[in-house]
Image (cartoon, rainbow over all chains, first blue to last red; front, top):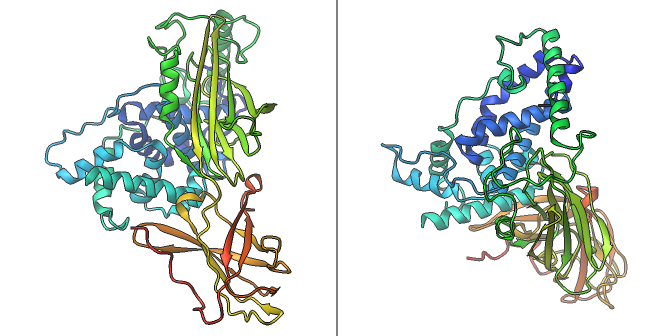
Length: 159
Length: 356
């Protein structure tokens, strides 16, 4: 493991922790949605550690957006780096769940990572596509296209 | 989901089903404390101890580098030959069968979800992922148009994943190739700029795991051609007059194929039609959304005080082109035709016909 530059420089570790504490739950939920619960912690740990090796979280103009992007990139890389369990550790045999929502959940697992990300940011976090595109640092039109493709696939899967 | 919003609650419940299974977020000190040491009990939150922990981590890393490689550098180097399944490198994700064979690579290439790639679109996601993070493996990617002899213009290779900030990499090598050497974990972004005709392009990869194992793989992607301008122009210009102020120009871009769309500087091209517009005019433009039943259409509404000299009659095709200045690195040009309608046409157009 490489030393943490932030520590070696004596930077404000407390601030880093503060920043992390504010975003950690959102990050893990986001990572879970992208890669599944089995690897979500690893994804979050990797991106936070990588950032700390480069500098403080507190130095980022928008740490949340940065870390969300980094989680998405890491998730993207993870899914391409080799075959992973399709379910990613999700348990879809939850009793008492309405069948339609379960079908949607299964269909969501079939979406590519970036389409999943846009779905999460818009449907779950309530962002507009413009806000989601800024979060992902992609064009507004691209975000709309991802959402359109995701909806189309969901519609097809559910029909 | 018929209109993208009608079943929003259902989609939210589906998302919630998955999100609710999120594990507890790791503690900050679980992340920042080297795994060879236990967390807070052994490393206090004192900056002094944190510094010591970092120093010890550096020493351990140095020793690891000495043991694993040539011992002279921690920079990415050609990988030593490892047997599949070798787990001698702590923290690696080596598994039998992941050392890189043609089938594996092709599978990864096929994973890239985007098939119809519009201009301006970043194709993210091509990588040669074998080896491991501590045995970086050099690989070469070549990106070229599938048409024999077609110059590589318009294809730009970027890296940057997994870091959000990207730098352009790669060098045109002639014969329509872009080539770049990169290492495990670096994935390529390919930007297709300003290709009016579109076409198929290929990504060809070669990885040298060792001298005896050379892996070639290729795939190709479709880049659609020009921006699909679905534009129409309605003005209240009287064609017989030599010069008119143009109060509003509206046309539409289909959001499904545009990527980043125009943001400014849309102008009529006087050279598009031999008998066409004699002077060009620059308009101030803004994006507007025009929802339809099955798609979201991005409209660009341009309203300018510019005057425009017409020497054409209604029905004659003129040209229109635009640059995207939203991102200076992605300047594109797109051109399409439009038909000037007479003053009897409505001032504003209806939304484009729905495609359902």
